[in-house]
Length: 334
Ligand code: SF4
Image (cartoon, rainbow, N blue to C red; front, side, top):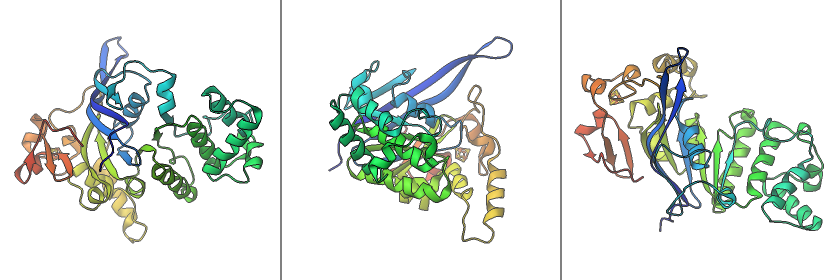
């Protein structure tokens, strides 16, 4: 049976107001009509380039700011403002482990403070035991040795494990990872992905944000692809990667280097040339936002937004799919 969502975005839109160099008021359409549901023991990957809106969506889910339209729901209840209890449930892990930790404090102090702030340990003996348990949970052993270290004495991967341990100190139900492995050496990314998979398997609801669709395929049960503030495709991770429906997803996959292919570097170069620059979110393209970069665009793509087309457990928004599948423009459940 599919578990009920812990945290959900329901038709969420976020616009920001900025002023240009001439002082004119402009609207940045960072996220539009985005929906997703995070369930215990499952991982959803949000994939897209910089500026696709995935970080804004994570921050909406984390309660950093309210949506312009739509709802964030915690266990089915609309979230209005956030509280300490909300941060008990929902924790956000950032990309940069180097700036996330106080370099002047030992690891034991950093984790102990989070435990005490959220009332999970009171006496010094409790704090020490809980700190050691957290370090063991993120595979930093011997725990006593790591608790005594300063962040500068750790590698990037070890620091990101401390950041994750600090998030776990509040015993959250949901972990939102905003590019949590992208600043780490390739050699240690897999270890971190395996740690996140273990946390998911222990019952945490996980959102994994990345521009790397290969790592999304490795970790996530479901992948949702964002482009220029909109969700353009979603489905079970293996199906989406094996047979992408949307031309943007196809290009994203083509721009993932294949280490086994002799022509991998040339393929990557060609795909990146094809992708070109992402569009402005202040004045996005009409119709399908991908049409200026789409190699198979049609005249209708310039004028009209494509409907959401459902194919079994998957959906995508592309005019090319309308001839072959059931159209469900109002169906946002996924
Ligand atoms: Fe390309 Fe048109 Fe599909 Fe957009 S709707 S992805 S422009 S074919």
